[in-house]
Length: 296
Length: 228
Image 1 (cartoon, each protein chain N blue to C red):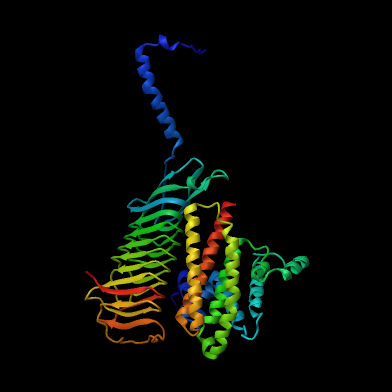
Image 2 (tube, each protein chain N blue to C red; image 1 turned 135 degrees about the vertical axis):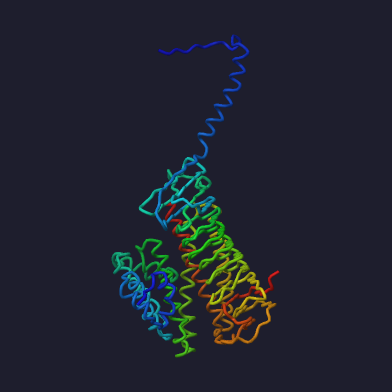
C-alpha cells in the first residue's frame, strides 16, 4: 500500500531544495524530448538492384550509396501528427509519409530522411518541398518535386528529374540525364553523359561537362540564359537558336560537315562544327541568351 | 531479333506517330500488350484528329466525344449524360463544354484527358505531312483548334485554384507562381504566332506552354484530391 504525505515547505532540508531544483528541469527536458520528433531507424535486407520509392510532402531527403546489401531508412517526422511507413515487398522498399488525422497543419506535414542504399539501387522519389540529395547511386532514378531542389552527385543510370520551381544540380553524373522544370535553374557540372535533355522555361541552364563522341545534348528554355563551356579538344556539331534573344559564341565553327539543319527563318541562329563534330549539341531559347564560351 | 524495352518504345513514340516503323519496335509491340494498347490509343486519336477539317467549326467536339467513348470503354467513366443534364449542358457557358462532356470523371483522369486532348491537337497541327498538304488550311485549323483549348484551360485553372488551398503554402505558392509564368508565356507565344503564323518555333513553344499548363493543372488537382 502506498501513501502520500504533504510536508510543509519550511520543513524541507536545504539538500532537498537542491535535488528538486535539478530534478524538475530534467523532467521537463525529458517530456519535451518525448513530445518532439521521433527518430526512427529501419533496416531492410535486399538483393541486387533493389527499388526504393519515397513519397514525402516536405522535407530533406538525403540518399547515399553504401557497400551493404541493405537499405537503411532513418526518418525524423516534424510532429507526432504524421507517421512514416517503410515496408518491404520482395526487393522493393516503399517509404511514405502519411497524416494520422484529417486536420494536420501544413507545417507538421514534414519529415526528413537519411537513406542508405546499395549502389545499384533504383530510386523513385517524390518530394514536393524541401530538398532531395542523392550521392553515388548508380541505378536508374526518377525524382519529381514541386518546389524542392534536387542535387545529384556521381550518379549513373537513366536519370529523370522533373520539378516545377525547384533547381537541379547534377555533378559528375554519367548516365542518361533528362530534366524538365518551369522555373528551376539547372547546373550540369563535370558531366560524362552520352545523352542530356534539359528543358526549363524561365530557368538558366549551365552545362560544363564533356561532349562525348556520338553524344546528344539538347538544352532548351524560354527565357533565361543557356550557357555551355567547351575545351579546345572537344568535338561537336552545334545548333543554337534564340527566337528573340542573343547568341554569343567563342567557338571557331566551320560549316557543318553533315548540314541537315533547316536554316531558320526567324530569330538568331548559329550552326557549325567544332573539330570533327562528333557530338551533337542543340540549344534553343525563345527570348533568352545563349552563350557558348571557352572553359577557363 | 533483339527487342527493346517499354521505356525505349515510349522514347520513340513521336517518330512512330510520324510513320517510322523500325523492326525492333514492331517486334516489341507484338509481344507487349501494354505498349500495344498505348500505341493503338494514340493512333486512333491521331486518326480522329487528322480527319478534322478547317471548314468544320465543330469538328474538335468529335474528338472529345471519341475520347469519351474510349474512356467509357476502358471503364474510367460509366454512362452517358442523362437527358435533363444534357439540356442543362446546352445552356451552360461555352468555357465548360469539356468538363460537361466528362461529368463523372475522377479529377486526375480528367486532367489526363486534357493531356490527351493536347496530344491530339499537337499531332493534328504540328505534323509536317498535314502542313505540306495545305498550309493555309493548316494555319486556319490551328487557330480554330487552339481557341477552345485555351479557353478550357483558363476555365479549369479557376476550378483547380480552389483545390490547393489546404496544401503546403510553399507548394501552393510555387504552383501559382509557375502557373502565372506559364500564362505569361502563352500570351507572348500567342502574340508571336498571330504576328507570324508560319513561325514554327513560336508554335512549338506555344504548344509546350499549353502542355505545361495542363501538367500544372493536373498537379494542382491531384493535390486537391489528396487533401480532401
